[in-house]
Image 1 (tube, rainbow, N blue to C red):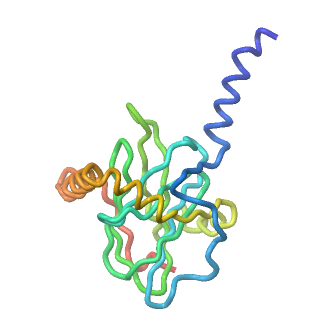
Image 2 (tube, rainbow, N blue to C red; image 1 turned 135 degrees about the vertical axis):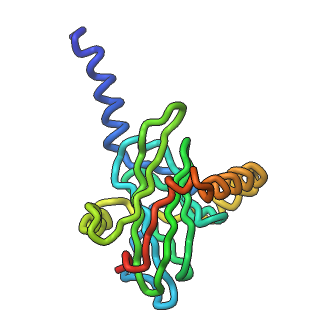
Length: 194
């Protein structure tokens, strides 16, 4: 019995890290959208297929607008105007996707959890034509939880932290637009829509 005393807690921790879907007070489960975006809008799906780090949620911004949280084993849709967008993920590190979106098309961005020094780091991966994820996103839509932002909860949270969040996002945008920061910005091109 003693030989299992150390193994059982480790197994419980591993199950919690890899097998659970995340949840937060700012996002809630919903029915997935049927069909694509409206003809005059573009739709971007943010998908986090892994259950690793299920309790960690990453803020996803469209420039200076908070659009949702990336949660484990979940995805959310963001309908927006076509054209240029600068999607930012905030964690211990900062990552971005510079996107050119076409009306009537859907685009996909994956979020990943990585080990960090003090807290989790993240990856933002645009799903481009020919990439290893191109054929996987439709399966993800069937197996992941679809979530939507609780707009009131997000607005309340942002109001409480207005100065801090504005300072962080302004600094992040400035940094990601420097020569050093540009290496953390990935492209999502207009032809990557479907």
